[in-house]
Length: 350
Image 1 (tube, rainbow, N blue to C red):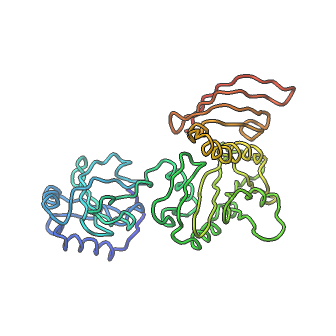
Image 2 (image 1 turned 120 degrees about the vertical axis):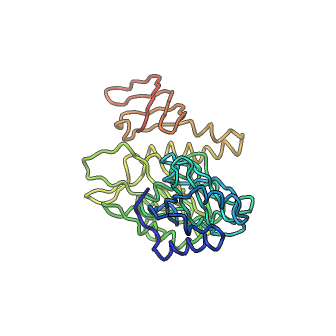
Image 3 (image 1 turned 90 degrees about the horizontal axis):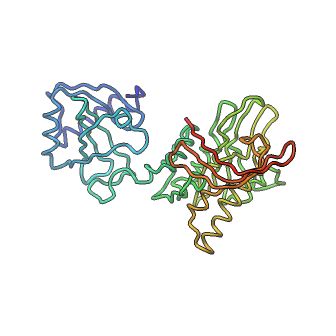
């Protein structure tokens, strides 16, 4: 349980009073608050007479059984805590009560976010997109930079098949979202570089030519010496009407002691991610209905960091599990004469 307190004692008392008004009073049950969490707006508590509370919840007509977990990080789910859940009916921002079944006496109560809808409606509960692997991967990257993506999504977004396809959505507050991206900071400096709309474009601006709206690329900061095994970077295309947020497998912009410049991985990014997996992918899907998932498994490789800038190739890749990547294809080394051969690789990330 996180100790990060997200609501005041007065706000916690308001939740307790709502329980009272709805017929789930904790008075006389020997209970006490055991902690707060940054993952939900409420509190965790211990109740000696949890069976009595469970009986009251079962027979309370203002609540119905609703076993649900939080869509992103859920301290209870992560800790293996099972529970009976009860949600207030016919209400937005409804109360939700969990009573643990394997840690006796442990309970929690919180207010459901407004985008969970109204309990009693067919789609009540966390929006389904919040549990998407693609959404969670991108939202996690944004969260590290201090941006909670969910706050800027209006309605149901379109989730792509891969993190490179990303998330397309109508922005809830475009100006606030764009400003949050501009203000995002890393220890080395700013997190994103914005494509210029006016003036003479430089080489980095040219990397935004295929970007609709206002483009932002995540900067990969380096001290010029240390290396990283993660070459990916966020890429955002924002407009008041429609936004896209995705993760490029190889970032295009690097920052260091001498300033910000185009990454040496840019040509590989253009060939594999822009031309093959974006432009050609859409063309083949539109013209001959080749499944997008099939093209997602193809790759071409130009000299890049992961290959020591000494390899070109092509092939087929797939991920049987999130952390496992298997490839089969052809590659040619460039140094000391061209040497081409069939390849098969197996890699796992930890």
